[in-house]
Length: 608
Image (cartoon, rainbow, N blue to C red):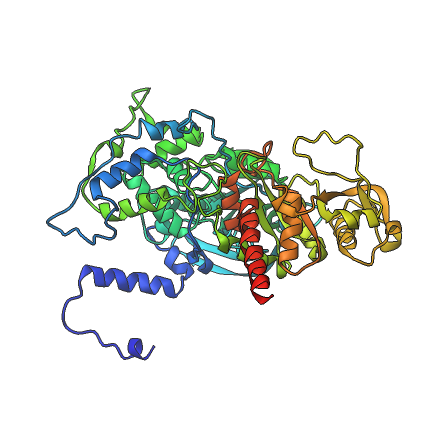
């Protein structure tokens, strides 16, 4: 800080890069509303909008064509940040096709010709929003009021939790208790730092925000400003997506290529904000039919819509606007692409041309998005490597630490078995909140893996005499803890967590449980994962390895992207990264046991 405060500029003229560093440095110190509501952009951005965390998992279906061509151009590995390039010796990156391999992506088809499920976003749900404060907001467009809210942390780690409302000072949109305001014009606007503050011309966001401010200035209404940069993927990932667009991908494919949904925004706080303002129904200022559907699903009463269409595209956002029209069903944008009554022809993809400016940055973005994580992307499940591990020994050690700390982990089985992932934790550590999380992301069939001797002590016989389960899962009769232990219906997260903990309690006796119930005890095979490669045995083994009780909780994870299916490895990796869960596999646990038990046995022999 002393260096900064003592700095005195010299008479020498600053270079353009120095000016850029100064401007960006100031922006990182904090944003002010006036920096967004400048005369040319008329946009509002809150301070938290600058925060962006983390990267993205590799995409589910990768383009081997792009990867191989990058390697052909740059050698074995691409040169990053211009390490080997100079101003007079630039490499031309030619991407021959988005009509070949990436065209398959546009049709949601992978390289094997199979349908790839793509869901617009993660599941949205209503969340409470607390009113914080309100103040005057004088702007170059007129006098407005600025109203701040705060919500719980969103499930999307790249979104903020401080939405704001802007309305004209002389036209307040509020209703009253018992007399809600109806048909209120409302714009649900998502943050765009690059456009609204940095004045980028790559989209129409700042223009739409200005149009909305002018509209509510004339007609009344409100703008709900959401901290959801880049359709919910965050600033750094948005810039990576821009780099992919620089070499020919459209805005949808760029998101998918980075491993994100095409739209990851959430609007769960909107109903609470409208309720606080006593607004009963709205006229939504939007071109986006998905936003209409999402808000209605959340219970927002939308009486109609008002389009927010910019007068024209520019050379920098034309293709982006085409993608919104063609791939996101923004049919209101049709006039932008009609000339003399006919649709204008599609522009030639930039990917068919040579890129001679900024190629190192674009190459870096593509290379990062194409790199496999621990597994090659062609592997849609886990298989053991030569050393016997899939994710590695460290994944098991990390899982053991997590289980010891009372946390959940995700354990996947072999791709040739069920090819599924289970949430697993020590049964004795399960809280009602843990159970709520498990139920939310799983099939809801909550199971408890136990050793056979303990199940016999609790008089938990097999569910059927002739087990026809394809994988030989040894279900016993289902149970709930009895009413003497505070159980009501047995189905709530609180009740189920209580039942699970009692199954793990060595002091429990058979009469502590009512049969049937809502928890499924499973008999683990003696010898654990070394005798049967099932999640039941994995749950018991990992709990024992962590020094916990010999009872493990497990439940299968359902796909959020395709809710009629179970989650598979590519999605499970994204799920773990999003929620901070350790990911390991049954194969890894088995190999870890072989190694550690062999070492223990050898040490015991040496001691003798």
